[in-house]
Amino acid sequence: MKDIRRSGKRHTLLICLIHERTVRARDDLTEMFLKRMRRTHNWAQKKLRERQERQREIEEEMLAAFAEVLEEAAVPEVSEVGRSSDAAEDQEETDARLGRRVRRVLATRGGADALWEKYQSVSTYHEGNYRPLLWGIHRRHRAALFRLLEQLGVKPATRDRRLADALRFIQNRRKARRDYVDYEIDLGFLSRRWRAYVEERSRGGEVFLKCRELEMCV
View 1 (cartoon, rainbow, N blue to C red):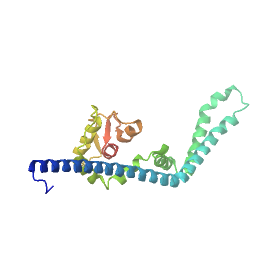
View 2 (cartoon, helix red, strand yellow):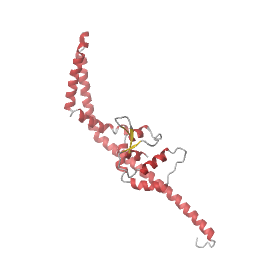
View 3 (cartoon, helix red, strand yellow):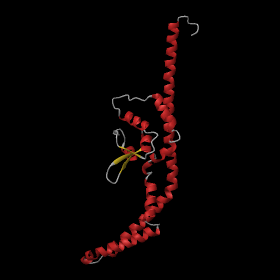
View 4 (cartoon, rainbow, N blue to C red):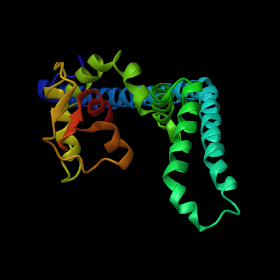
């Protein structure tokens, strides 16, 4: 370019070079972003498989407890075979005996509360649900990802602005320390699994959005 004597031509070529390099840099940054998100999902899926292996023993324990409850429930039905129609009069007593036996089964397994906690820990990751594991991996890179998205200046390629609005929503709240935010945006672009992941319903029936989960989803 130094050999080009006409400054107008030299400046034009320089502008073209800068533009071409800028486009290439943006493409590279976009690819880096996509690779980072793919790695986050891959690591979460790997951790899910490891967790499922560790939880297999808990699942077997809960199945054994459920089998004992079914066995106890079947006992009154067998004992009632051959009895006359007055069996209906003893139904309440039969239910009471069954309740006492079920409580004994639960007690030998650690109690209903302990079994419920085990169920919650296992059911969270049923059907390959690795989403609850994403945040622990994502949070180490979130600051860099936010800076990257700001530099890229992401814009929607269609008239559907819901995802872009959601992105701006989390960008404006990235330093907030709240666990929940009001349902102020349209999340119609979410699948059923993602919606269940980001929404939280209060006892009064009001629906809120979980901040971390929403950020990870978007």
